[in-house]
Image (tube, rainbow, N blue to C red; front, side):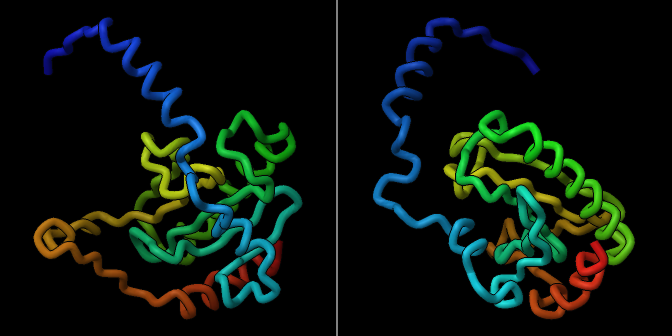
Length: 170
């Protein structure tokens, strides 16, 4: 692969960033993650555990079964906006979640990630969240490409009941 250095694009990139700043959530006062944490029934929103600085939920729109989200309570969009205590807790919770998924889901690998900002792929750019995604060899196929369909082999209520006992011990 060849790389083309294009320094003339620096001004454009800086300008576009300023124009779009603050527009990521234009017209939206509602944050789905803030609503989930305020919901009185954890089972209805698939919330698995509430920690001091963050909580863990099943992703309602998973890429694979067992796709977890670790979400800080504070509505911040950047990792550096969190307190040291919150960042440390999120990493410790991440460690715990990976162990659970490997044990219970028998996954062969894991994707872990933060998408900070819309350009990075964040679907909800204003509220930071970490994805913990179990993976198996061969878990991709032609259906998403040809038919726009992703097959998920386990429904959320069943998976919630399966994973909840691990978090109840915590």
